[in-house]
Structure formats: structure tokens, C-alpha cells
Length: 600
Image 1 (cartoon, one colour):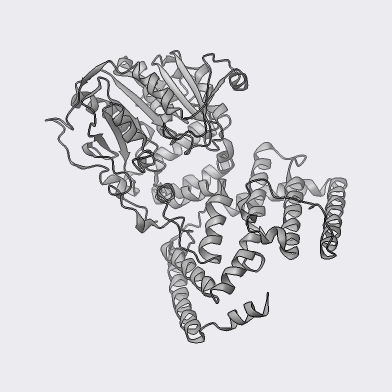
Image 2: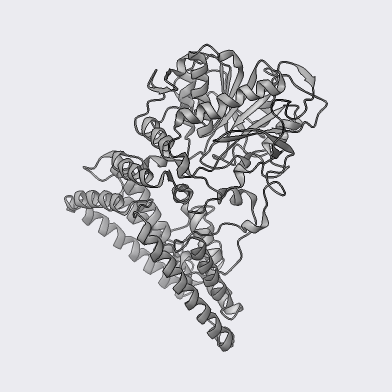
């Protein structure tokens, strides 16, 4: 630090600093009081569960201790790399050119500041971290004598620990933070602590890192603003019908079944990237289910309820309003899983002809490999979760957010921690992050069934493995034409697992693989020119063989789906009015259910 920079720090307004410190102290005391009040009512449940994590590492460390040769070799390898790093630093201090011992992977935004390369101290800190992180992960991987489930937990939580300890996450070792503190005479740190306290206040003593400025958005105004009406509602859903923008529309309406783990408006963020608006503009009469954000009063609602009060009721209402004999249906994520169940159910009761075609976005029906979410789901953790939901009546939205954020902690936790708290910057208004910060609760009965029967026991893929409404569900009975779109980098619904359904249904299936991940790969407008997609008319049992024989196409999969669903549209009819005599409009889209934000 130069003499001028030191002087700049000394010029801090002492009275302002004292006032800030007093304010922080008073707020901290209130936060602690709220936290203690909450603790008195809390059952101690949290994700991840410290006992489960500790147990996994105890098993791993016990096995490692029984392999002293491996530990000794690992220690020797680490010291060898440290020695190389010390030599590198010494050479740089002597003004000599030298290659770094460790480099960040391309695109690692934690070390984008030039000081990480140009200044010897920060370069040394960075490389020391990278070497140590690599050594820890290598040492804790492939531990002899522990089961696969334990190893996956160890790998996952080791990665999260290593990410949390990055030097970019600490004020004293982040050059951008030091620079900002100097330039603002410490105001950036004061603002950062203010943001930290606000997030603690919002979480009633539990830290919820703000990802965006939630006050910058209003549902129905600048997000979820496609014109439409609520035309039906029950205890679980509101059904939205969107106003036509074309004189002629497809005869067969389109019903979209979004996930209820989060809210439907990820499909309607902005006009430029709204799949809902795009479908309306293509001439579809679009209906969308908006799920309620449940509380303890809906604890008894199970998966059968979600099917009956969701897509089954919605199909009947859509048919009544439009006069159409058949509907096209599209399900996203768990909404796609429910759609698959609905198709099998309709086939079993002889009503499969209600649905002309089905589209599944990133949908798991075979949970053999469900990605890193498996880390949170085993018999031991299910018992803990069941007891918690039995007491609460639901799983809190904050707990669900915690799970998904941990899957991508560098992007969804630490980047905001640095921006908001260390740099003192305001969260940037971003529609996708607003949606991501608006989670929903899971009713106890439904969530127990979903996690146990599908994730834990993988019963859905088995013929008659589960029953809904008293009817055995057999995916082999599905003869409805199907379009499946999965994404190459999906960490929530791995594409090779979603592909499995192509081998189980009896009807024609077109499987398409998009680029990018679970959200960006689906919300990829037709004119984006991004990501591309793969197509292959063959459906070998091995997904790798499917990809090896696939054709890579430029642009968005939307253009391909547009052609496919047009073949199932049933021709054209005059644009329809919103609602009917029986189902009159209740309120404007996006409705009131979606506006209920979590308070727990």
C-alpha cells in the first residue's frame, strides 16, 4: 500500500464511523434476539445436516488413517509442490520470468483482477490456495473402504469447503476489496457490513445472501407480464389463459405444467425471452398452471392430489373453455415428471386421447443417476427430513434454496458474498436471480412421496411401481407422441438419465439435447443464436451412442419444437376469447398464488 493510500484510509470521517458502529451494534443486538427467539422454537433442522456431514468425513478419515502409505505420499507430493511455489515466488522477487506452478481454470472469475497476476503477494496467495485445494480434493477422493454414497458426500462437501476458503472470499487477501476500501476511505466495508446486517434481519438471524434487488421487480409489471387471466382455481392451482396475439390459432390448445419447486414465471421473465409469449405469438392458445405456495394447512396434499388438482383438472377446464377434444401438454422438471405420470394414468383409465402430444423439458423419470442432489437423499437423511416436515407440515423454501445454491456455490453464494459484503456493492437487478430468490414450500405428504418413491427407491420407472389415485402407473402404456428436450450441462436432471424414458414408453419419441444447463438451456429464445442442439432420429439404449450419432444444429431448440408441435396442432381456428361462461376470468395474470413469497 502506498503512502497516499494509507493517508486516504486515515481520512475517514471519525464521527460517521462512530455513528455507523453504534447503529451496527444496536441492529446486531436485535438480530441476535430474533435469532435466539427463533432457536427456541426451532427443531434444529438444517440442510446440510452437520451430523450427516461429520459422519461421512469420520468414515473417510478413519479409512485414510488405515492407509499411511497413501497419506505419506500425499504429504510428500504437497511439499514438493510448495517447494516449487517458493522457488517461483523467489524468482519473481528477483525479477526473473517464471511459469506459475498452478493456474486457475479458464473462466474462473474469482481471480479476474489483474493484481492476482501482476502483484507477487497476491499471485503467491492464489497459487498457494490452488495447490492446497487440489491436494485436499485429491486426498479425499477415491478413499478405499467407503461406500459410494459416503464418497459422494465427501467429494461434494470437500468441494464446498475448498470453495469457501478461496482467498477471494476474505477482505485481507482480495486485492479488489482492498482497493475499494482505500478508494472509498473504508465506506465500502461499512456498506458491506450494512448489507450483511440487512440480510440477517431479512432471515431473522439466519443469513440469506441477497442475489438481486428484489424491489426492482413487480410481478405483472416487469416480470410475468404477458397479458392473460386466471380462468380457474382450486386449492393447489390457478390456471392462467393468455390473450391471443394472432387472428388464427392452433385448434389444439397448449397446457404448460411448470415445476412447483419454484415458480412458473421462469417461463415468462421478459417479453424478449418469454417462452409463454413466444408460444402465444406462434398461434397457440396457451394455458399455464400456477401452483400455490403451500403452508401447513396443505400438509396432507400428496402426489395424487397434485396430479388430480393439477394437470387432470386443468385438462378438463382447457377442453371446456376451448371446445377442443385434445390438448398438447408440456411439463418442466418435476412438472414433466408429473406430466409423465398423468399420461400413464390417462392411458390406464382409457382416456389417453385427451392429450394429442406431450413435451417434457429436462424431466427425470429414471432416478438411477440424479446428479449431485443424491448427496441430500438417503434413508438416514429422509428420516430426519420426515420428522421435520411432520412437525412443520412442509419443507421451507429457504431450505430448498440452500440445496440448489450449494450445487453451484461459487456462482450462487460466494460471488454475491464478495460483491455485497466485501465490496459493499448493491445487488444488481436481474430477472432470473429475482425468480431464483422466490422459492416455494413443499407440502409434507407430497415431498415425502416424491423423494422416497422416486429419488430413493426409483419406483416410477418400474412398471406399476407406484399408484396414483389408486391406479398403478406404468410408463410403458404411454403411446402419446412425445418431444423430450434435455440439456447437456444440466446438473439437476442429468440428460443421460432423462434419456432413459425413450426406452420405456410405447409411443413415438423425439429426443433433443440442447446446450447449456437446466434453466439457460430451456429459456433460449429462437433468435438467440446460442448453445445449439443435437438431434438424432435413432434411439439406441445407450445415450452416449445417441449423442455420437447425433447431428449438431445451430441456434435454439425452440425452432425445432415449433415445427414438431405444429404437426400436432390440429389445424387452425379463429382466435379464442379468454375464459368461458362456465369459467369466467377471475383476475389478471399472473394471478395471486404466484405472488405469495416465503416468510420462513
